[in-house]
Image (cartoon, rainbow, N blue to C red; front, side):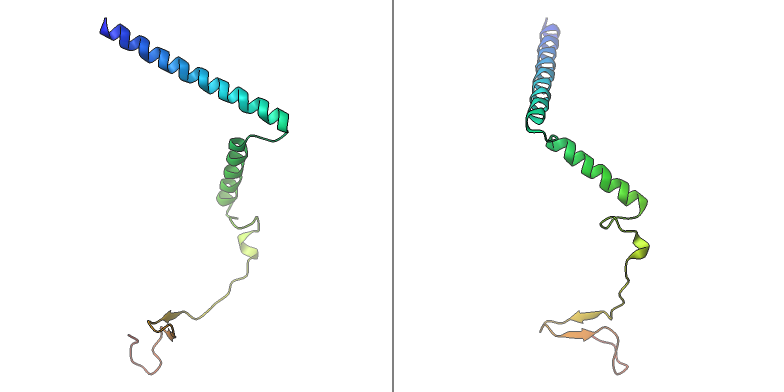
Length: 97
């Protein structure tokens, strides 16, 4: 008797959850038809899918191909405690601390 009661309680819970989800989907669909906009989850999913497609193609930044970007070579410096940069390479042959 306990198993049947628990089964019925679970079935009622699942069915009520499905009914609530159907009401929300219907409400969002009607709202999107009234306002003329796509629902926010659809827009978000579309943006994520487009970004993932660009990343898989190797062009992650603003739709430009990676080969057309300029490469800038700079000398790396370490900023000390006083806020003054010091070079990472030794200047007078001794190792920088």
